[in-house]
Length: 264
Image 1: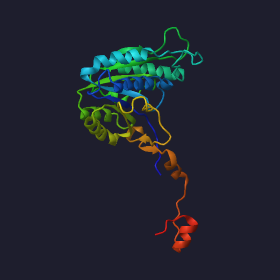
Image 2: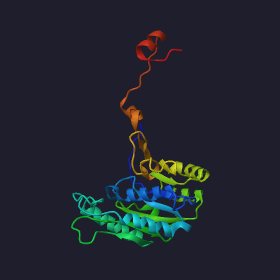
Image 3: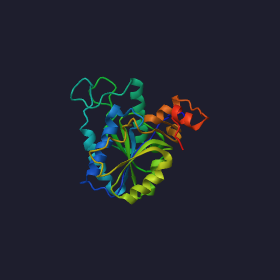
Image 4: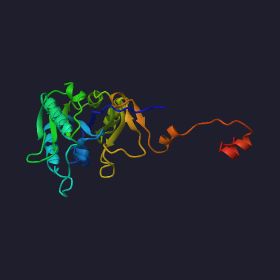
């Protein structure tokens, strides 16, 4: 029996160099990243923490993501205009503030901040940072459990994107956005040993697929390394933990008819 003991997960969203800003794939990338930052105020194990972007696209992506995050209305969940509520507690707010400060020592804050001005409660603005150096350990080791993500620039190669994603030490989910089949295959194959699930976004699935941070009942949820080293099985496979296997030997006709064994 395999047991999933989840520690944390520095999930990555990877934008490939072939994705044009005018494409549906790019729109899907922006929408999904913003959703993962906002949903549950970033307090979920499948939220995106690292956003890997080709260096040539960095400035445009940061601008567009800040625009998406700027549309999020932070406030009282009872207010119909609110699209993101507070973090869970005062302790959580302190942890998120401290985490943002640690990341900001090695990055620039593109938008957001630790709290919403004038608000009474444990409010955090959706926060996007831009790493100064992709190799800095803190971005691959520290999970800030709130609406916080860091853009990390890479050279555009699939192998490099996968290497940086794998520096998380084992993740529940990674997402790859590309319409280049060869690039996608190279990246996914290199990521697979360090991810429990890999979600591929493309024009073929734009508008038809749930976001990578949403776990469907029939999928395996879990991951290697720091993500827990196990899995929670979905669908019929999940029932195996609660069933006893027994071997029955006897006359074939009886066993097949009474116990459902296939006849030769």
